[in-house]
Amino acid sequence: MSALARRLRARSGLTGRAWAFVASGAGIALVGLVASVAPLVQLGALLLLLPLAAALLTRPPGAGLVLERRLSARELSCGDHLDVTVKVRGRFPRGRSVLLEDLADPALGAAHRLAGRAMARPHYRVRVRARGLHQLGPMRLHVVDPFGMVHRVVTVAGREEVLVTPRVTPLDPVVLGGSSVGRGTGHVGPLGAATDDVIPRDYHPGDEVRRIDWKASARTGSLMVRSEESPWRAAVTLVLDLRAANHRGEAPDSSVDTMLELAASIGCLALAAGWDCTVRTTDDLGLFTGSPMSGVEAERRELLRALATVPLSRAQAPAAGLARSVDTTSSGPLVLLLGSVPPASARLLAAIGPHRSPRMCVTLATEQWGSVGHGPGGAVTTSESLAPFRAAGWRVVRMERDTGPAAAWAGLVGAP
Picture (cartoon, rainbow, N blue to C red):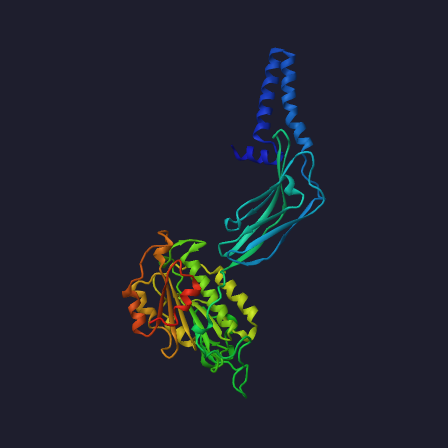
């Protein structure tokens, strides 16, 4: 079908059946005129008039029909249910077939169609599974005549964004140790200390621009950043390996999604227990820096939003500056979450972090997430890969697919 024909069909609303009637009617009427057979002319005219009558009877809904989509929530966790209710002002067209279609991303169940009795109180429920920022809409109203000759499509509602964050699993707080400074809203430091003290340090790629200390930068001649970390406060540092080559499976059932669920659970646990929390990737990209002193719930939401939208990396090796960044910001437990671990990467990652702080490593048995990979590679974690971590004093746990975040996390207590 040519572009002109598609454009004409879309504007008129005539279906293929209607155009077949038009073509047949025109042909029969032409033959009747040439042969001077009046009944053929009449039959052709009738066939031509049927689509026209259907188009006149099947008009699009008027401006008085307004549909408004209402969502039960705009931020959900993986596995939650999203309830969508459509508020209708005005009346749907009567005397013909009407179908309400709400388009959506595959993660939100693709298109949702309502017809018949469901049109009286439009409502549907979908279970969200894959993390990320997903689109819901636009909403379209399909109006079809009883003979199937006219099909009009009218957009009646726009798009909505739904954020799906990794699920948060309750974890044992004992694993982090007993050195956290306060609980809930955090600890303001020793008596007499100023709460607005800042410690300028060199700028590293990934630092937020708003943290640049311009006065210190002018004084030193190089970019300086306000770390805003008091020396008496401890922080939990999470380092995530999001390199595509080291993960397997397809979302939402992939090793990456399992890792992010564990990261979200650890980060929320740290904030709730009074720790500051920093999340970086092995590419030395800062994903999140927060403190419970700013409000646990607000920081928790920012953490989950960051983990929900972080993309996979195509890098083949950890960033060269990762060790320096971690040493600069880490002042408490260091938790490393890995997919498969090639021996070369293991030697580099085992050297990061201050030795005086607890260092813990959770590596996923990625081969159990199927043979579908996100990139080249396919390395499998072996005892040789984990040997550098154990030799450097890390507590190491290998997480099986059926283990679950809580069990893997608890296994770090007695891990070698």
